[in-house]
Length: 198
Image (cartoon, rainbow, N blue to C red; front, side, top):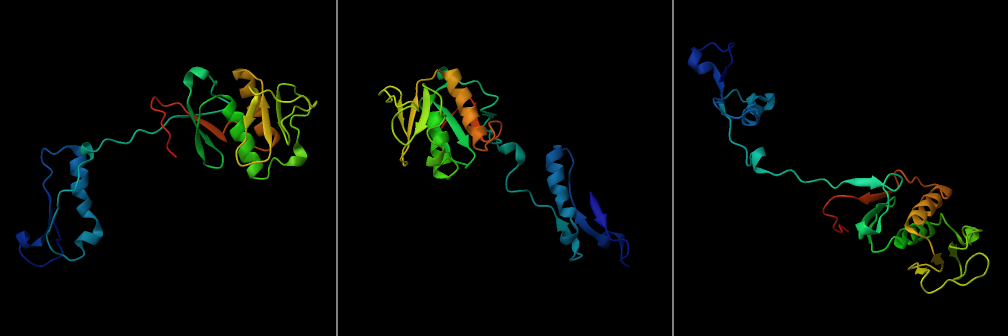
């Protein structure tokens, strides 16, 4: 295909300013060749020959995007451990146990000064789940070794004697009570290849 500037006063052959061959080429090759029709490429009024791109699109495998589900949508299951989880502060961590979900939510809320010591013990009624300034439930009963989940980098404690479905319920409630959204603020990587990215 040729493009000619018909305003020039010269022979027809000399009016050609662009020469592109797109015969028998795949559509995406043609589109890349035709990029040379961009006006800035013709500003010199000289014949421009389309050069092949450095790499053709069909030589590149598109990256597979991870699949994420929110805490509100995903059903926790110990069979899916370890979980790769992304939180609202853009941090990602791999959960080796379901209890780690409550621990990580409490840790981020506390470190962001959203959950404070004035809010503890939380909740002020449960005998099976508690975040506190000391390793006891709200009624003063000590956490057992099995129930105690350390919250690193803080001076608070987590006691958890809950099953998987209860942990999910209390995690959603904890988020909501401190201004977070279980539908957007905690995401689970549900791709086949759940590898730690951070």
